[in-house]
Structures are given as C-alpha cells and as structure tokens.
Image 1: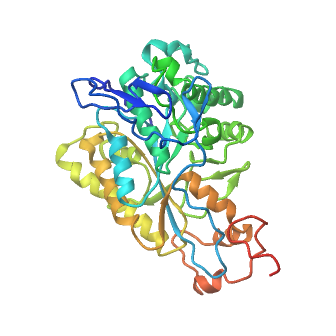
Image 2 (image 1 turned 90 degrees about the horizontal axis):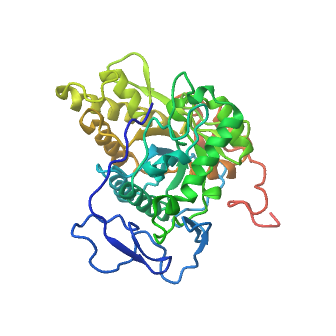
Image 3 (image 1 turned 45 degrees about the horizontal axis):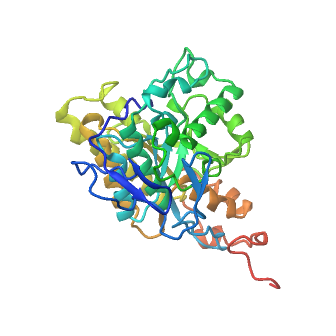
Length: 425
C-alpha cells in the first residue's frame, strides 16, 4: 500500500499577506499565477479578520477556536434507521504538481462531503533538513517516500489549512513509509511507534522554521488535539501501533481489514478498518483501496496497458458502488474507503473515486464524513444500540424492519449528550 510518490517542486511562488495571522510571507497562499507577487492579498483559508488567533510554538500552528462546519452528533432516536456513513480518506496527503489535493477538496464541497487527509509528516520537512528525521530502525534522514522542498511545503500547508477550515480532518500517515522486512513498521515496538508519532507531530508543529517560511500563515489548529487517528503504511504494524496510539490519546485506527459490519473498539480505539467489497468479474472480494485494485489488475506496474485503464477504473467504481448499495439497503454499516493522490494507470482510480463521491454523497440519509465525525457520532450513541447493530451481517437488513429492530427504549443519554431528553422526563 506504499505511497510511492514524492512531492514535486512547483513553479514561482507569489507573496501572500495574512495580516490577521502573521503578516506577509512567501508561500502562504500557494499561488502559481506566474510573474511573482502582485501585491498583498489575504492567504487562502486564513481565518477571518478579527478572529482570535493564538500562535503555538514557532507559529506553525495556532488556536483559532472550534472547527467550522461540523454538525453536532446526535443520539439515534428509538426506531430510527441509522444514517449511511461513508468515509473517504487519503493516505500520505500532500499537494504536488498533479494538484489532486486541491481537486478533491473542490469535489467534496460540491457534493456535501467532508474527508480525512492522512498527512505524511516528511511532506512538511525540506530535503536539506532530512537529518532531523530519525526513523526507528533506520539511519537519520532515511525515508522511502523522500522529503519535500519549500514550494511543495507551502502548497501542502495551503491545502491543509483550507481543508480544515472546510470541516475536513487532518490525521497522520506517519513519516518514512517503511514496509516489509528490514525495519518496516510491522517490526516496530510500541516505544518506536510512540517515537514515530511524536516526530510526525513535531514536523507539523515546526514546518515554518524548518522550511524557512517564518512569516507564513499558520495551520489553524492545535495538532496535539487535532490528531486522533491514523492508518499505518501498508496496513502493517497495527497491533503495536494501537497500543502506542491508545496511550497517546488517539480515538481510532484504520489499519485493519474487515467486512462491512458495524465497528467495535480495540484497546479503547474505534476499529475503522478498510473493508472488503465485491470485485466485479471475480469470485473474491476486494479491499476498498485504489492500490489493491491496481495490484489485482496490473500487478506492481503503476502504468499498465492503457487499453485497459477505463475498464479497470469501472471495476473499482462499480465494486465500491456495490459495496455501498449492500450497506445502504442492508445493515447500514459505515463504508470505509482509502486512496492515494496518485495517477496510477492513467489516473483511472481518481476518476473512479470521484464518480463514487458524486453518486453517493448526495443521496438521502447518506453522510459522507471524516473519521473524526464518525467516531463523534459513535461515541454519542447508546452502547446497546450499537451492540444490536453489530448483530447484523454483511448486507443484512433487519427482517422485522428498522422501526421494530431499534424500537426498544434505550438507556437515557448521559447528561449533556445531544439527543438527551429534557430534564423531568
């Protein structure tokens, strides 16, 4: 599942002014208009003038208040059918010359969706500072996905800033993306995972200093509080990662493989694993990730037979849609989908994902959300309701109908939880 890309350098960068944050800076807006700066302008995604902003540390991040555009999770009322949650998530999220990060932000907004972006910390670390990264079981400065440059960091930060202000979640895909034997993440101890997580946080919290963009607009969140979940490289090392993450205050993990059923917790973390869905034309099911579709179509070649690109994309699209319908018309288990910002096989998987977003996220009773929003909803539910939902198998709708299946009066919601009855009832 390795994200094999390296963030590419862009073109000339425009000067951007974010007076409400930290003055004018090169790179804060990620503009590629050409010809250099044309006068100060407000940085894209910067908080509105007058908004309270308290810089953290070197100013790479900041307190700006509650995240915008997040609905309060409500407890499911007795007899009501659960909403159909769909999570689109991106491993190793960064903005490069393909501009897929910015493109899918636009797609999400157009289709009433929010998403989770798993940021690779080394995408905020410049090549010349690579020695700052000390990966477990590897020499300092080693990374299987490279590092970045000033332009790539500025562009990525711009997208992260805007994404968060639009209600999306910024998780982590850690740093060097080491898979397999010989020091891969599957061999890391709990303490080594803690060290890797701490470094991923540190690169986010110090990108202005490391990239020499000391006056650039900050990311508008406290990453120590924002970071609540992850997906491990190649879905390896989950057992020790979960132990480390639980001790570091994470709330979920998406590194496993599961069927389309309602999630449970592992060691206190919600297990929001990747899922198996139908694979059109095959008798076996396929993991809901672009990389896995590719491997089962063109092998390890990322640029297979061009004559088959459209067919392969349709296979992924139709497989995901079949999985969606199976849940939507069945047990309503959340559908978890993972991707990379890559143009494998001519970009066919990016087109497939976009078509799925357009077809499902505007349907009635569907909520395309981030992992954060999903776990907030799960945590607001009556545990007995969730336990009952877990009795439904893949694609299984309640035989007696939803109203009867979930009609038993649940325990009163804890005081202060949205959906709790008024006092006195």
